[in-house]
Image 1 (cartoon, protein in one colour):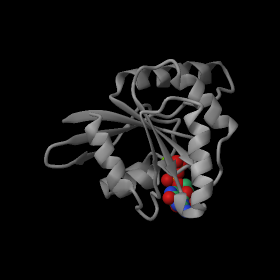
Image 2 (cartoon, rainbow, N blue to C red):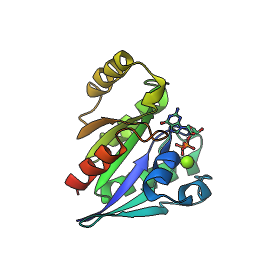
Image 3 (spheres, helix red, strand yellow):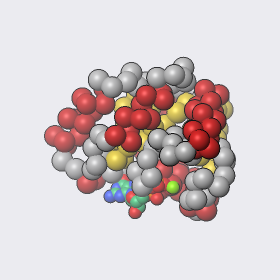
Image 4 (spheres, rainbow, N blue to C red):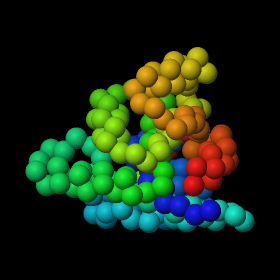
Amino acid sequence: KSGFISIIGRPNVGKSTFLNRVIGQKIAIMSDKPQTTRNKVQGVYTKEDAQMIFIDTPGIHKPKHKLGDFMMKVAVNTLKEVDLVLFMVNAEEGYGRGDEFIIEKLKGIQTPVFLVINKIDRIHPDQLMELIDRYKDLYSFAEIIPISALEGNNVERLLGQIEENL
Ligand code: GDP
Ligand code: MG
């Protein structure tokens, strides 16, 4: 099994932290100026029977000008071509307007989308349940997986679910 996985989400939700943990190198951090590279391969995770190619897809945010609007369309088209989209949100911040914008864009694609709720080390389990209920109503995610990219909680499980969906 092999597939392309696009990671999207607002700045600071933990995308690079997750990739660094999974890939085990500092590749993701080097591309932290997201507007300079398009759809850059950030790393490849290989297991015995699976290969996951993670790509950074910057530009899924409310555009401030015409060029931004064009780049956003390019980014959304990329989401149609990958095998799986990981939409990462910050558990601590909860649901925000930036997420709302991204979810609107996801409605135009057929690719399965996992909601990855990151930074669960920062919240109470009750808060997590509320957040899951909230997001469930907004979009039909293929999976909803809470993780802590920093501490590693549930990251293995997420990788397993990704593998199953490739
Ligand atoms: P990106 O902009 O989405 O790539 O986010 P980064 O990976 O750069 O992370 C932004 C900040 O959130 C950094 O200070 C990380 O250490 C922190 N962070 C990332 N994941 C977690 C997590 O699971 N728990 C906590 N507490 N902090 C995290
Ligand atoms: Mg980053």
